[in-house]
Length: 452
Image (cartoon, rainbow, N blue to C red; front, side):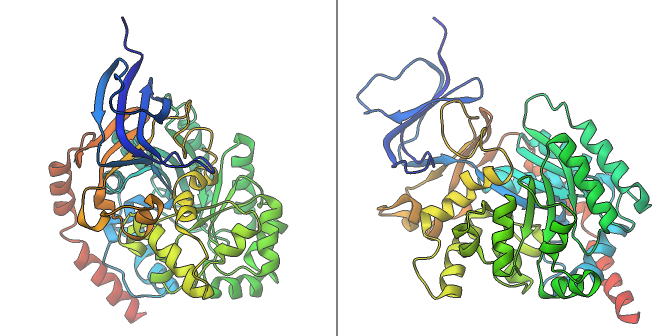
């Protein structure tokens, strides 16, 4: 008799993240053909159904995999090398020059593989990534088995892989076309316009036309700093949000990243247009950019997800830290401890993040028929004992290191903290060897910048 399930996991504490759903205990998750077949409660004395694999998840918390709505995966190369700078200095003095002169396709791929290892170990099963040589990122994330929305970066100046900015949209179009037939539905290929201050109006509108014609999400940094807002006003007479709206870029497929400096009327504008927002609290804090009006966005009905940004401005690809910071940051900023409660913060990192990326029909909740993307945390630890409210623990007590198992599309990417799709020791050795000259290279860049 054939087994109805590929995996039957039981005796767990299960959070489905469906709106209004209560925790399930003792809970089970049944997986068949890469999808959630059943979720529910089953007393341990009941006989298990037939399955190819069983997992006794006693002491584990099971929930949907985390969704990272904004990342620049290969920027793991620059972790810790460009700290404590303003966004403008960070970009112009170090990051843009380093990307242009040090990055190669091979280094982008190796960096993305390193980032994939970090993402998996942090329980992130879906990531939206935007960078240059993005075909190499796509290759690395596919190898790792992650679900991803990969976006070719577009700027109006020479960039890695696009020395002539006149070719930026041609390269982006070819990238999207090459990824259009991804067989397992794990990868979506689109584009990412860096910002209104690095892309002119012709590039912005043409890029949006490319994604709109294909029904793909369109990513852009928006109103990240006060300086960006002032510069946009000086050039166009409009704030960044109003400027993009005048160009016709704001709609339900646009993902505005950061969205820190929004006027109240612009919050309503994003809600009216159906724009989604990727909130990157750690990056915003570290770069001194400001505090995004997330409570106002949520109250207006804007869909908001959490993003790590790149490791050069966050230093970790870790949504547990972003859940914790987001919940605390908005409380102190509003002087209101009821703002962004724990359950809502977890929703931003899962269900709402999936909605930001247009993937809510596939992931974000443990719902029969959706993809089997979930993670398991070890609750049998001092900092998670005793447990009264699993949502509270996830936001205020848990750490990325508590994740022990990770599954994507019915495939284990990590079991018992061991990576199964990436050869960690060889990967780590290759990264360390390739990075040996990087600090000296960045130091030379900084010295050159000081002479100018």
